[in-house]
Image (cartoon, rainbow, N blue to C red; front, side, top):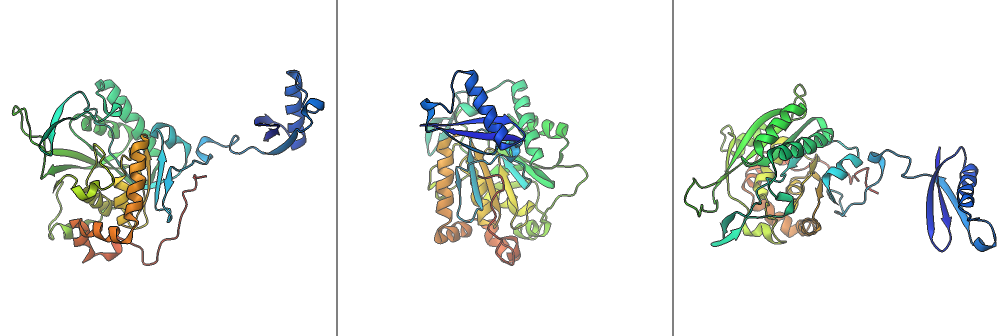
Length: 359
């Protein structure tokens, strides 16, 4: 058994020692200090005392150590960690029903575009700087491997991208044992113009939908998707606008996805009360959509600026008038309400549930 020994002087120190009892742990620490010519019980250390307890969290595996959330909503349905997803994902053991990921597209190389009638630079930040194909492949293999460990056996993952990164993502998924279900083409109804006039206007993004296992069945709400598509089978081409002005009330992330897109994804592949992970949370559109639909969310965001934006959006949508207004502005939710009211909430309110790895 390891023990954690707290030595209280004017400062508090902690030592981790292997010992058979608390008394032996204290004796071990005294010997350590004695070897350094520091005697903890002589007159120079009259105020010293020991508090010995089972070491927490030092003796536990990384995934059992409690994590401090950047923010969690009062009902525990919106949870946010601020930090590097590669460092944080290995630190907890929890299985999610669904993952949505909007990873870097590696497009920030000095290009320009048009926004609101103005020519602007499309560089988004250091996290989106161009990389070699080998580096992109290694990056995608790494985060997709970590995410696969966080999915339930029947869980699914959605990953957005453009031609710059989506082929690497697809290859990584296949190599890691995922089964690709669909590749959605999001055809934007309001794309920015092509100012060079040398190419077709870029107006699409791709969203891969895959399940964790080749042999374990996934959940798909076929009837609801058919209903919101005017009682026709929904195809893999989705025509939707980019984000609307009302979605930017707390600021705008440079790669922010529209709530309508995430709402369709979540309704299609999860049930009420499901836990959803976003390892590259940005401004947490995934979490806002999840909460509008009665699902629960954990986001991980590296940049504190965007973590703060996520927190502000969660606080905003928890206001009942905003919650109702947002739902009325998302066409798929409006259509779904007249056929499957149970796709939003359980018959009984779900219990307040704390993520078990939060301290």
